[in-house]
Length: 81
Image 1: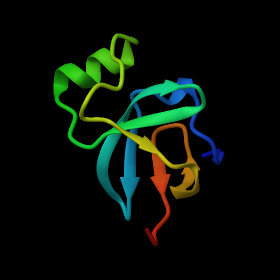
Image 2 (image 1 turned 90 degrees about the vertical axis):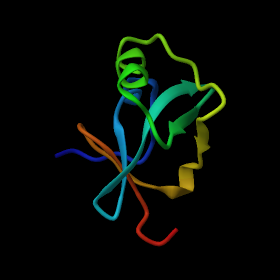
Image 3 (image 1 turned 180 degrees about the vertical axis):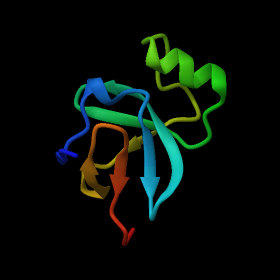
């Protein structure tokens, strides 16, 4: 698996994982900032994958320094938060 250290617009819809546990999902990417919904439902997941969702009230900006790696299937957060 290839890993990179920055989340991009192509990562919208990917799960965010911390210590092997899913903690949210990337729901938007705007002006270089990724937004994480910590509790996405099925509708939000589908909408994000097809590009219909903006970050709304329940999503939080993901700080770059918290990202350990971005893979093909998930975004991994640093173990020590």
